[in-house]
Length: 145
Image (cartoon, rainbow, N blue to C red):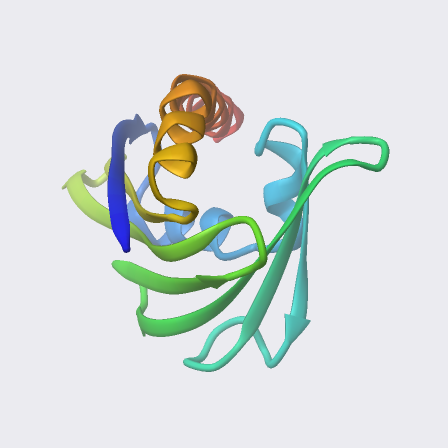
């Protein structure tokens, strides 16, 4: 299976604990993730095995992204496994304290590309929009803190 990595970084104007709290407020992500409704689908959202779901799209047009937390190290790291029908792969949120009032947020996704060359061609058409959406969302988060 082919994979493609997407990595973005944004500086957040807050301390690492406040940044972490904002990021793991799963339902609250709906406020800054463009076109996405996020909710806790199982577990407490703060431990390995917890499940998160996110619907990205408009009205009923879109896709459901289901995730399972595979590693969590507050207030620094959350790793997930994407288990949905459309989006599969690995993701992580990494936070690095730069100063007492500034935190670097590293967003990483390793997306599995299905369907051979057809899937690869589709991904390369979708990838710029996906990356822009994540970039826009991270900037929205930074402005909200």
